[in-house]
Image 1 (cartoon, rainbow, N blue to C red):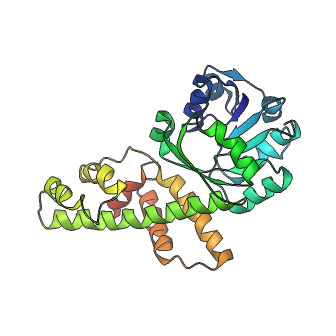
Image 2: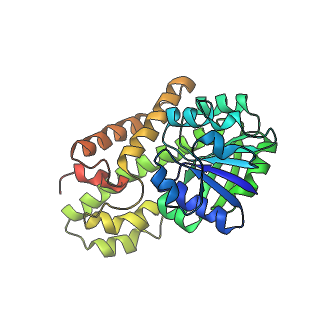
Image 3: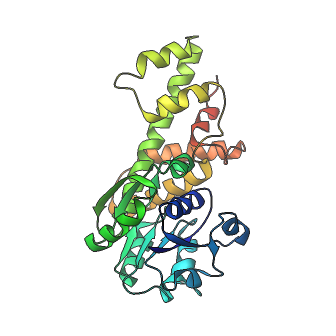
Length: 279
């Protein structure tokens, strides 16, 4: 297929690379042109130029405003995309803008991903997809190049809401893990033995297996940054105001992440949440 990829940051660049290696003809656009050129793929000057004549357009940008700009803004992709082309958005944004884009273009999939930079580089992302059945089936053929799990969860906006569920879960797990680690340290336990003992039972989680050892060493240069997590939790908390859900733990952990930001930890991964707890 002929595919345009808009947004070649730490997630988008490897995803675009997987598409090219899968045999697709890929053109990229990035606001900072040097990042687009670094992919070694064909570079367009605007989102509209990238999207012209394409079978699919994929976006992975920063937030609602960025997504609006590259789709419906001046020189946006929607102005030049063929009617039969599918638009796939991997940005984590509000469910509201996902619905707006689907209203403007029926062949539209909101597909935020989980798996982080490592998942993008390995082609093992998980995509949670909202949109029509027709849009999903068309987009699935594109996403298979870089996603190991692709699930159609519902109508437009449902993909973004599912990503909010994902982040709510992670926030609670990380707070519990942080408290458990500090408790083990205060008890002067062998942390490796504790991990061995509890990671095979009901307490086990991805965060425990992958982050307990690094948290114990005060190493926080892995995965998803706190700055981005706060953005995502903010989206979830705003959506909860609309749908009536009560999120006391998510709201509290969001405040805790804010404390770590004030400790200059905003660019550290989310497991740096443990830093706010004294040893």
